[in-house]
Image (cartoon, rainbow, N blue to C red):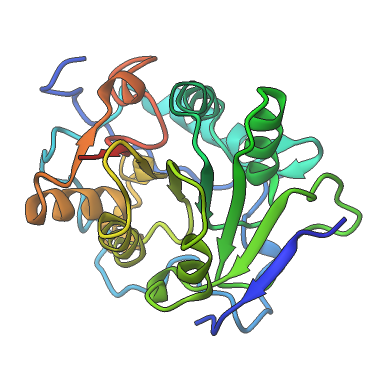
Length: 278
């Protein structure tokens, strides 16, 4: 059964570890998340064609605290290669298993009424959220959002109970998602996992700051690109977005350190990315 579709116009130690960059390239056999969409005109380019010099935004200032993870370069390189091949129930998922474990703790502790995933790809992560919440007897509504058309794989199973909305994360005001959120059960868990550019991550932070209630959670994914030396390709990426937002709105969210540091200081693909609305 295909998911319901709605369309709109698309458009630990506070000092932290010593950072050691290790650029990670997709090796032979690894999945390039956009490989199947390179000829699709509605695909936002992987690197946004951002005109930065290599090495720009090398290290984000430490606000709310240092962003470096405790992954070593060798381990991060090997771990990332596995993440880029990771599937859930045969469907591309591209999620860090460490973070999936953290997600399960958050789902159990917070029992969200609605999960909003920004960035759908093939829907493997949405299936994971749906299956876990159903297994635990939760009636959590799963909404997954992408500016592209539905990217579910041919013959994919298990998409029932997942609602797909085509909306651009840069244009959430007045969007189909905004209309849907009017009836979305609380509390919300919002996951930003789309373009990983500063612009998109910051736009999601600003939008949901105005629409979330205290105690609801917002996760900004994949700031780990900074440890991989790739921030320059994403205009500073998610970490810059978190830094700039905390500089502008220091009392809007709190960092959920118990989750972020569960396996070690920022030992996650989402350094300083687990946030709770104040």
